[in-house]
Length: 485
Image 1 (cartoon, helix red, strand yellow):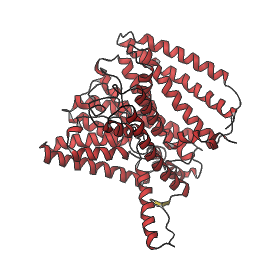
Image 2 (cartoon, helix red, strand yellow):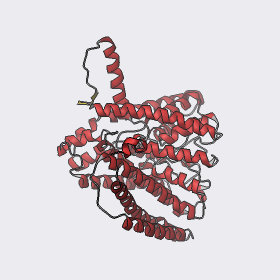
Image 3 (spheres, one colour):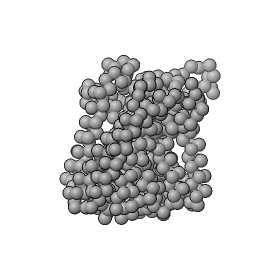
Image 4 (cartoon, one colour):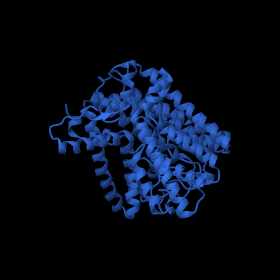
């Protein structure tokens, strides 16, 4: 990796920061509308960040390096770090006066669509801060889709979106019509947010809260405008089912939505990962609903509503909560813990391991068992009607192995800060999978991360970024090979 590539990555990140500074004017306008003095801090931050980013962009102008995987990895990391740092500044300058640690944690949680928070008193927080948190989730969700849909498959470290893109008259060049796909992606994403907002309002949610929750719901980000999340709407099943529908949509592969919008490809719905994703959502939700009906005497519709909402929230890594599910009993807690690993589909706004990896892993396991009986048999690994190339098989195994190793390391590091075992285990897991809440009295569905030591917050912030960038895209830049010639 040469200096030209680093300089170019910094330049692009600086240009990106200029756009972020413009976005800060939105919460400034909201605060001004609600006659909140925080509009001044957002306006000042926008000018400061914009001027600084412009200076860096001008200072780093130069020859653009040839596009290759190493430059792609470097650029992805620079863009996400830039978004996290820029997103943190308004939290420090606002009336909340968050520390550097808390502001960075909150920003990382937003841009990675994790939804963990360190802010207490959300119900009385300035409206501009609430909108900024939701905007970070909105931008993070859009970036997550682009990451999984275009960049990670191109870098050969994850994603199966190119299976469908390659079969849509673009042959082997998924970037040939990049502009068409990008416009379609932004359009679909925005329409979903608008539709979700309208649906929340129609179900009885206040307009301001509906806008915030819609951005976070479609992005499966989990940021709420209330300390109690959706517990506030626990008695309104229409709001909860609206959230369920749009969280499920957020977990679908946007490559299929794009192919449907651009080419009317209904056959794309046969993507195997959709069946797996829908399957485990239904199984977990129904199983927990039956458990709640039998063991807690809850009316079945109420049990089904809350089990579906909370399990869908965990599986799609949205992180909302409509009830304190830590009180539901051991079976429900066990299901929720397992669901934390799952995630939605490739090219969606969700985190977690994701459905397509489970498909490939099951195929590898099945083929491995067959070879124990027939050692000389050649059995291809299939994904639907396609053969999974060796590099994707390796990427899946490498991801899951690195996920488990990093989870173990993060548990040890969090335990070293003085956290109890449950908090350390679920805090590390929920950060790596970008789910949001963990288990236990501290970071459970009715708690938050504010009481954690600063060191633990930095560890969780790093884990959230690692999980959002699919781990390998971050780890690779720390290898000597990456910086060699």
